[in-house]
Structures are given as structure tokens and as C-alpha cells.
Length: 71
Image (tube, rainbow, N blue to C red; front, side, top):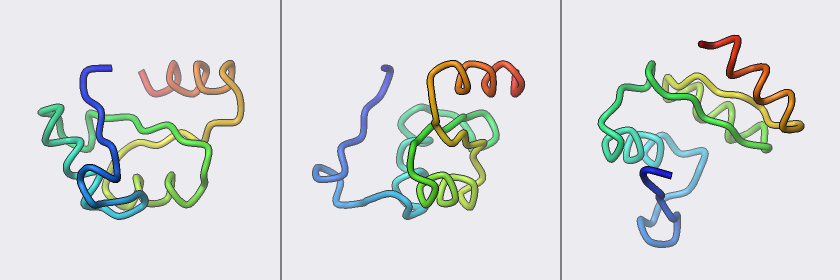
């Protein structure tokens, strides 16, 4: 991973927009350039509200297929 954000270290938690904004800033990308993957629907909704493309993880094959659709 290029960057890692630990909630306890930054005092923010998903699905708050602020944590997504912080990660985007650290990566130097816009929300439209990023893809977020998580197994909790509430976090997917938070990422989408922050403007990110988001994939709800169910299994590895599904995530790979969904990422390929985005690309």
C-alpha cells in the first residue's frame, strides 16, 4: 500500500467524509480517480457520498471483476 490511514491515529472513522478526504490528500488524487473497497455497506455509502467509486466486497473474484469494469 502506498498510504495507510489508521482511524485511531487520525481521530476519524469511516464513513465520515473527512477520513476519505484525508486519504485522497495523502495519495494526491481526486475522488474521481480513486476506488474504495469495503465489506460494510455503510462505508461504501460514505465513500460514494465523498465522491469515490466504491465496491462492496463480497469475495475476491467479484472485486476483481468490478474493478475491471471500472477500468
